[in-house]
Image (cartoon, one colour):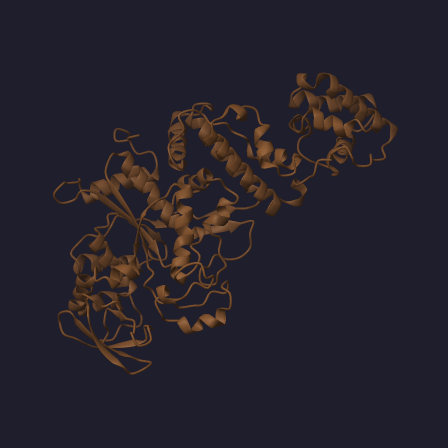
Length: 535
């Protein structure tokens, strides 16, 4: 749906408006679309911190498309960078030291699944991104450099190398020497970047020497597959080459004198274009799992691991509901329950099920729209509250299909909605098995266990509850059942807390559990009586 007539309500909308305002209106002869960019070096698993940039761009892309304008979303794989460090998580890491300083496209895949180490990480992300509704156009920098597409940009950097060096030196404590060259050459003798520039003819021919072998070679920039620009020059060159209008960056790039500052200067002064609209995004922490996010060490949380706990719409919600310059944590602990509850609340507000003030309604509705993987649902979807779903799954020992099937209304739902609910159930079961605290988990007794030794008054109360449920189960709700247990305790002069503890031990073998009234209803008449009737 188009939001052209609506005022911006979300940070992504604000940046979409800014792109249009600062980059000017589209023109069929000069500018036919806006280009939004993101990218990373596939030197390791693309972790959830890296994903923040990707989805931040996607949200702005969606905001632009909602305004009815054509947008190109490019994702650059900087796979022509050097292999600088052997991560700890690859098999036989010592065997990979021989590939250090080579382009990562020339490093073999340690898992023997793809053509290179770079392609293994590229495919890992490219396969996952459609799951969360992100499908950019991928640009592979090794291919683009190797095909000569950037030859003119490299030559321009060489022509203005003194000016580029002066810009970079303004922000360096150790100035680049006069003999510095704004190019990197991978020696075709060893394919390592341990080389020295010997000469440039002022046009297309560049001569270098291999530091390891002493061999010299002259290459043509238009056909050479071994020359590239260093990062701080490469970035602005590509902004110009791809006509990039929007690209965010992490706060380390946005620091004073950081790579975004120098890239902006080089973009204007060397390539004669204005840098893209941008913002800085903050770091992401992980709550409920140990370890620091680091691609180079292999200690990362990838998108695949987040999708094991959060359904795709909720993953998008985590980012759509948080301003990019705010640091936040992705939780794997009990906060998972609240995050699902927050998403469900946003959905109910969007559909007018929950009533809030107009400003809150507009805000939550837009967050919900941007959280959807594909089309925005036309009608309120069936909601199975995450906590309730966890209880259902524990009751049926992880039988996902059964847990979903037994929820009211699911039998009549369309296949897409059932699939979405089953996805949530799989996430819930993964969370229960891997992250839920021990006190949260339980196993429902099935009636075959040896009955617990109970005092007479406790046994009478259990039998009375069984009789009540046998005769009037359908007449109760959570509140009335809870009150019934209090009544049974008072009638037999038992402490209510003691009776609740007894019932939990009878049902799940623990002293406490989910709120009892609702829990009995969730378990269901047949399963409850199978246990209580043994007393």
